[in-house]
Amino acid sequence: MRKTYLLFLFTFILFTTCGQGNQRDSANSKNKNEVMNYNTLTPEEERVIIHKGTERPFTGEYVDNKVAGIYYCKRCDAPLYRSEDKFESDCGWPSFDDEIEGAIKRVRDADGRRTEIICNNCGAHLGHVFLGEGFTPKQTRHCVNSISMKFVPTKKEGFTKAYFASGCFWGTEYFFMKAPGVKQTSVGFMGGHVEHPTYEQVCQKNTGHLETTEVVFDPAETSYQEMVKLFFETHDFTQTNGQGPDIGPQYLSCIFYSDPAEKAIAKKYIDILTEKGYRVATMLKPASTFWKAEDYHQQYYEYKGTMPYCHKYTAIF
Ligand SMILES: [Zn+2]
Image (cartoon, rainbow, N blue to C red):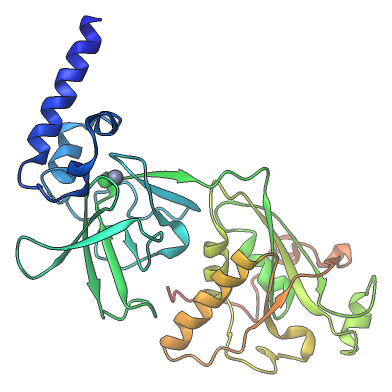
């Protein structure tokens, strides 16, 4: 009982202290019981979240976090940002070009220049928002302190399968099989009208299939977003007649998406590349049956111990 009373007293004092200078925050319009439900903060969390401090750049827990999931308010657990909207800005803090609808409130910073962003539910200080910098097509950068947030990865049963076509599937698979979080890869064919196609049939260029790599990844360790980035960074997505020296319809660049979320992520990266001035030739198509190719095509370069002739890694994002 004594413990409960002390906890109550402590939280009450904390609240009244925090409320000072923030009289118009939505937090203050809430009744005491709701406020009592806020999470207890460490002194460092309090310095940033309550007293509008800033964590040192490149020190936050989520600066380089690329796992799929949701970022919640550290103080009140309200959902704030989605991992799909996170991008690398090299500014030293997690950056997002969009927010979860209604989650963020913008207020004029005390410095009179910047726009501060706070949790719309509890008024916790998150960071600042900057516009028109050209990082992404949305021209918006929410620069957020990691310490103001709590990240929860997307919980998915088992692994996710993704399908990418970027020319000779030996080369496509070579890079995906080495990527962090990827558990398994296979090469085969997708998008055509012939059932159980053989490599020889597809080489006739009239089955409609594209050489495609099936990538099985663990969404707790990586994300579809990372897969899409790797796809674009390992082939020439501006080539319209094939890939490298391999010319023909079976070598075209294509992302086969499995659901609307994957389609939206793929489209987002095509838009980013278009913004950067690339003429993207990559097609977006719904995934259909994946026909696995003959065994001697699987993990080809790993088996041969050689390097791809038509794919190389080039950092873009
Ligand atoms: Zn909050």
